[in-house]
Image (cartoon, helix red, strand yellow):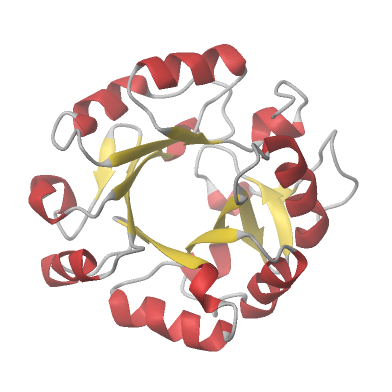
Length: 228
């Protein structure tokens, strides 16, 4: 998991984006996206195709998507599947980014964050997009969900993320209660958590709670997880 801001990888802390700074890591020198991505992927490869979640903070805050960075990551890792959250309001916004990325766009999977999705109509359209991912975002117990995604589980795509922003980079542990609450509404979906993981014990607890995976960055950068 990496957060991009103005061409560099930053350290996400509790979703307070104005305070993010270039990442300082035990596993890679500097904050260049290609180098950081390579270090993370080297520690999380499990023999399958590598997957990397990218939050484009420029786009999430109304700026232009960092297309050149995305192209560079895809070119550097020919088997990489890139999950990209770029503040998509709807399906056409994701299509526009794919068009801009070009030949490697089939390896992009758009993440539609509930903090950005514009409407119930946009949510309903995700069912027609096989690779779509919906992220149910919240901060300090408050759902970020203008489109009402949480009240329409019948419209959810096959892959879901539970994004507890105030746990990201906090070292406070994963929000397993939020995962359990939302997963109970649609247990047959693939459920990915995000935020708070401190160590391997947290990952085991998340798996026991029903998570199919968890997005991790800080624990890897701090050396608390060796990956694998």
